[in-house]
Length: 114
Image (cartoon, rainbow, N blue to C red; front, side, top):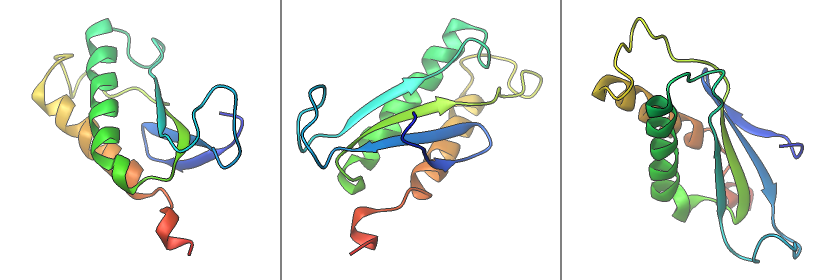
């Protein structure tokens, strides 16, 4: 995460580290993704797991358009528990997915830099 923030939304931040040079932890040419969902922002485990699953699902969908790098998606604010009463509600899942799609859309694409 010290590499910097690549994109951010109201609830999420996307950090990344380019893997242009060989790195001992990451195989060259592969996309790596981590999800950081702290208990501070999602108190219930079912909520943390639902958010984490959404992060991995959206990242897998976006993988063909992403640069080969190591990414970390971090939850940086809580979703309103009054608006999303159930931790595993479809409304929460839709809201998380929509915001994650926006997060990945804000990420600079490798083909745009050429």
